[in-house]
Image 1 (tube, helix red, strand yellow):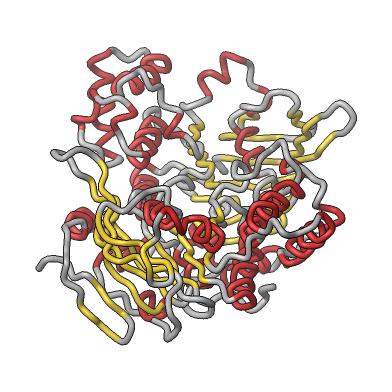
Image 2: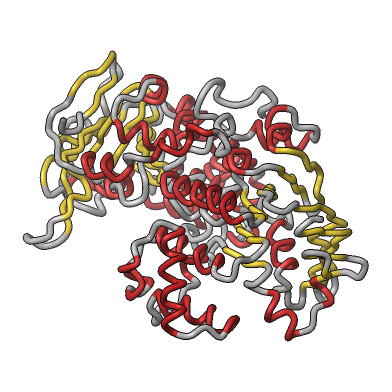
Length: 269
Length: 300
């Protein structure tokens, strides 16, 4: 069974006079342990989908009736507040582009872990410290940093800490919305390689959102391409790269200068 | 690099921050020259000193060591106005580099008034139309708009038009496409290439996106910890990188042909800390590794 199953998802942003449909009848599945990429330009609706899966939307966003988001067979859109509290982090965790800035600046790294672990599992301070040390190990950060404050760490380290917090409750699905866009290529490689390895060890699925197609092909098993709210093509990463079916996918590839070989693909301009 | 005389040259320039006991070389003995009709790319990770180099050229920073030469003579306060009329900058963020309370027309009229006071009002309006046409925007539609009415790509075109308004010889472009969507990016890069050819501009293109550097630049420099560690003809440096740091940087660029699932992938970053540490050590030696291709070798 799929970990995530999005069915006929439509989302509107409702204005005073106009209604803008940001997501148009989108359906896709993510299998256990799968790394699924969602690509497209700004404004195509990819983050709107990510927000919907975490039930993070507030008006003016409106998820249309008939839409379904099934996580392990349960419809996320039907959850009440108590269910939602236990669903977030425990079943689905999210890392945002600016996640490194979402750490609380006045709490030590240890306290940030304790906050999540104690709220969701009632874990004691000493047990939380042990678990936090274990989680930091997963993302290659020495345990000495537990007593540090966020401003003492580099952007890449903070982003890895957020990923470690995401792993704390062993979620089935991690949503990563441009998790490395603000970082350097070398740091980006280190982080994604680490996620790739952790996924193999721990077996969680990933919904990975980016506009960087080359990166997406490098890390994903399957990829969906979005254009103006529609999912126009879904296929395995190699097919999206080698023989894209949709005209827009071809044009996206053609607009990216390459590091090796021909400067840009033939379809360009 | 080129047979023409350089317009701007940095000659062993260093910029040092911090106090005597904790000196940080944001730029360490950097030398390069900008030639008409050519683009030089400066690549490196954040904190490597790329923007410091731009600020040294824009005279926001004064060199602590070395000289900034304009047509062969050091830039001084007396020649600053002529210098500013020749050297213009395009910034990274198209959303904050235009004044939100003024129209596009105002943004382009101001440099024309300041630098070409002889122009009459009608001539200025004609010049504005010409500039907008040059950057492929429709003057009748765009001139009266405010920045918030334009897309990121359109705003970046306005920034380029504003830089061109003073008839510059040199454009310093600091990450001009990093905040734009991929489909818009190529249009801006093509525009930069076209301006360079038509107007014989000398361009310094600063970026961390090495693939776009390859698309616009004849020559490239790789910077790390304030030093230029490898430089030369773009195809030679990117096709046959000789410095370990350049290799590290290139291997980290997302490449759809090399997948994470492939086995040999994991060790590639194994020496990353060592390479970084070694590359940061001051190195005065320069070795020529090929025609127009140089490195500062790491200590053995």
